[in-house]
Length: 239
Image 1 (cartoon, rainbow, N blue to C red):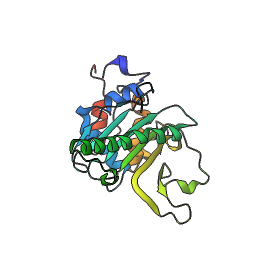
Image 2: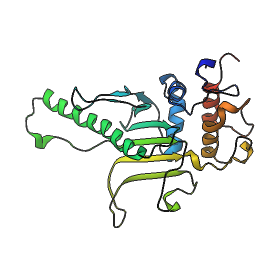
Image 3: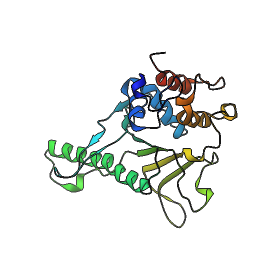
Image 4: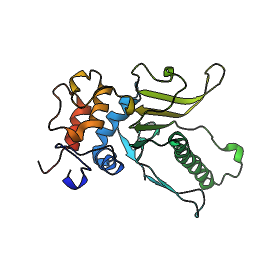
């Protein structure tokens, strides 16, 4: 990573809190293993062998409509599950609504693909359309805190809020097709000089995202494959 991409780096690593560097370092097909490790960290129990990186530029429903450009959109090669990943450094009041809007693009793509398959097979009856959706996960890394009615909205880590489509009365899951995960880095309790206080992999990951550009070297207790990939890719090649 060259100095021109450091965006205020004070150490030997690039700042990845901004879209440009986040896309180059993390959302890059050459760094597939790093992206897989991040997805597996944010979705406990998920195991991914390999992913396909999908075109991040998505068009509107009509030609005149403005499209969107995601930070990352990728797909599990085995299951077809899609992962939309966004980095947001500045607080945005409508951010959750924007993520909901973004989620409609991969869902629509699934339906368009199935309609095309029906047309190829010359089937005209719409009742033969398969509307079963393959799960879409929207993973957001936000460098601020979201507003919650209660702290119970956060997991045991106190840093991640998760949403799905559920019944208002008893929490019954309506569909497994859509999930939102917000890593609220604004709630992270440790400063740049408190790396030794990070015990879990999640804490080490968030610490790295927030402070890597201010570090001269990798903290001693930051071990494991995710840290190996992250610190290697964020390093300035000129050093």
